[in-house]
Image (cartoon, rainbow, N blue to C red; front, side):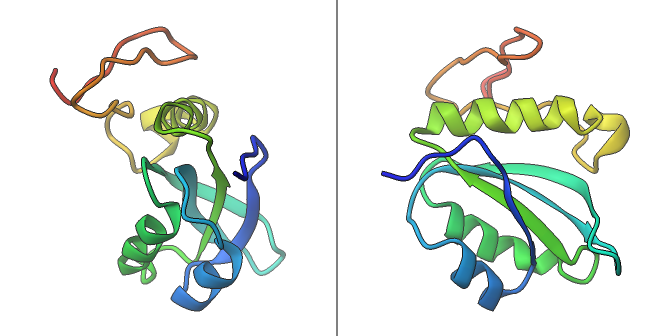
Length: 125
């Protein structure tokens, strides 16, 4: 199983680039944003996939009219994907720097704590 804590990319937010870059059917976290003409990446959305990051990124191509790029990293489990997403959320400016208007939530069947702020954010709350 492939797992990394280093974000890979940026890549263009197109189905072709997603298929070429994201080759494993694994959980993971991602950033969606813009790639400047000089190649700099500015994140605007943090997200995750608890099962298949490639499929989730393919669904995100609906945002391609607003954002042209993405970065991603695989996770070894849904919990690691959640923790990576939380870390990205805090690192990228939280609600002030991102389009995300709420802290990432854990899946409804668990009540995981954020590894950065320690709060429990569940879809049940």
